[in-house]
Image (cartoon, rainbow, N blue to C red):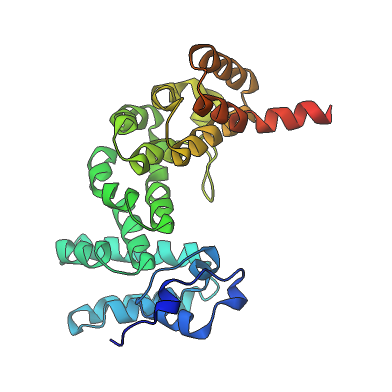
Length: 277
């Protein structure tokens, strides 16, 4: 492989998909570089990328399956393609070359390929959430934000199926030294989240999430604080009084700038409603 120019490695992501340069797009589709932003992430040709990643003869049947998927659903979104490929890989991992397949996707230089790995774990039919969390941890710690987003999204349905168990399992994550792990615990359980189904149980009774939220009420990481504030802002849309009460309690026991930041973020929807009345 030819050396990639420094200008590409240090580029800023294009503002729109139409402005992604052809040479950057080609490198993305071959898995040579990571995406820089959403515009680049949206234009990756995942099926072409998969043909490159699994070019060895031993993966011929996998390539055939992916070709059928591409022909059946030509209009799939970027997320839909990632989910389709991840499910296909999970099915293959269940019967053949599981460890080698996981190694290929987890260690690949392309964030798009690692996103497939997140979905592959989430589609692991014989594993419960307790078994999946250690498997997803490397992806939750990933250097690329797109992979970190897919990490929580991949396990979302497991949380929806048993919210209380998820809270219990994720509690130790809130005390982790790594900010990305603390943030994962919050983001995975958000009542509404992004690009995903809401968790009705937490919308109705957000107090169930306090074992995760309380340890993070004055977190030193803005990355974590943003997620905690968003969690409570989600909850405010169905349980406004709960959010007002918990924010009041946090402010009473913690006068730190970090707590004030979370409270401002948590109550932004409530304040807009008050101002519109």
